[in-house]
Length: 396
Image (cartoon, rainbow, N blue to C red; front, side, top):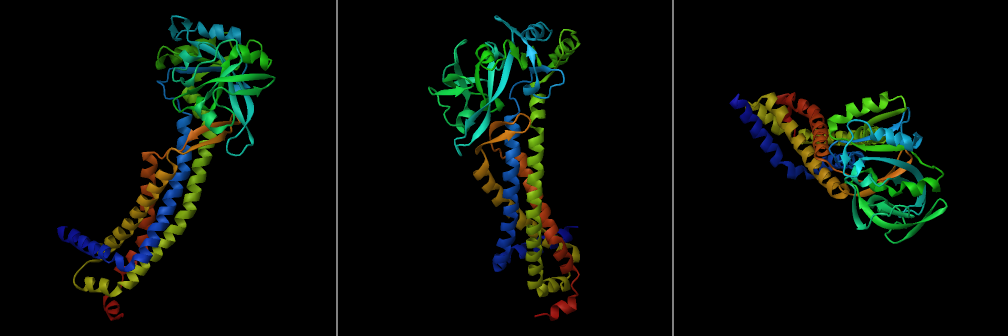
């Protein structure tokens, strides 16, 4: 066994030392794999970033209540009385000011994008005074909170980045009213950063939604209290609602787009991988053809077919991994943290997010490149191992 490994090591080192003599073909093979990996990581980093934006950073103790049968906040409708009944349910957290429950109104407005000037949908959310205790990841980073009863708004940092005219101190017209931007907030990188917030009591009459909401957000005493809370509100005959954890709700809201991006990314990378695979095959066949006499000489000296096959596979794998490292590095520096916005197909509103090149994506890219390298080197390796020794030694 030691002798077998020794043969593999010797032939592999010999092959790698001869790479400078074949640098053109080797660079082409590595560049092909680098391109595949860069596209693969770049496209899937969009899905990873969007998923991160739609994933709450809290402890899972935030629930959302919607009208029974509603799939989104836009299709839900609840009354102020519903909010009072929900606040009395077991499992709801309380502070010195009462139950941490807040009815919220969700409407869509049009604002021009900074990049193109074309209008796009932006979520405009009316919240009650408990909202900042319920959504405890909301932090004012510039200006101040809006004052209840006044036409004042605060904007998420993602919305301010993506849309024109959302700087603190500016005024914007939405509906029939003019609103003053008094603050800017962060929301842990989540979907709330793509929204504009105001007092629900002001937003309701502006959009003819007198004392009505579309969702009720509830802070639970603990993540495990969700079942008790859900059973209580869904079994209450005065309510026709459903309750679910906010994380589950947002995951469902983003599932369609994430699935599409992932499938699209794999398809594009797969098409490019075919090209890289043929490039690797060509490179390794050329390497075998250029070293026919060398391989035959090694076989004549007693080197077995197995070490020859393994050594060529390792050479092909090495070129693929070099390409993977280059492609992954390029994708990381080009895409990680890149700010963008896209439409959420469930709500048809813009969501601001940042591309995210995760460690998991980098691992996947290495696996992808390894498969290209191993398949690309397999058939040339088998051909090399099957070369008739006498005939190969006579070749010039």
